[in-house]
Image 1: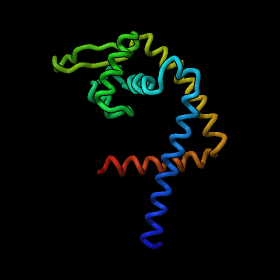
Image 2: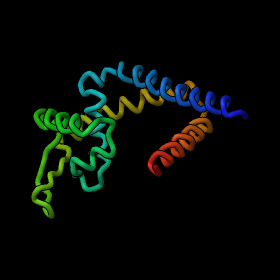
Image 3: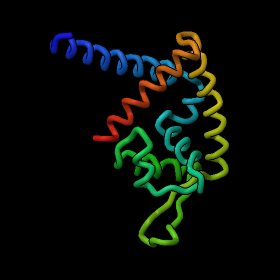
Image 4: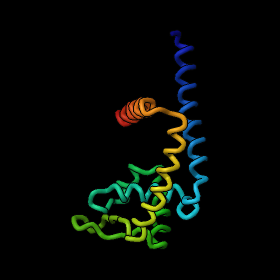
Length: 150
């Protein structure tokens, strides 16, 4: 394959991945559950729900969500004001602040999460077989590992 053909294939692959992700996110944002809790808010609650201790440093949360650090701080303030997350001082570092879900936040994350997973399944199952989904997972995992290796 020529360099020009390789460059074109690489660019077309990237554009396809990006445009597909955007199209799917637009469809998922139509979910009624995202009127109660925005997808970015859900992203924060979801990542907190996956934390084994139930608590995460704000800086560590930044590594897992799709927002910038200033946006995360403002979002955390809003979620705390709504009673969905809480803060506490880190025991081993009095300057560190940990955030975690409240009972209300955990319940809302589960409720929205169930609807979100159902909608993801409906979009994915129509288009891809289980083998194709495994291949997609393998490909996106390779891309993610490559980016993290940089």
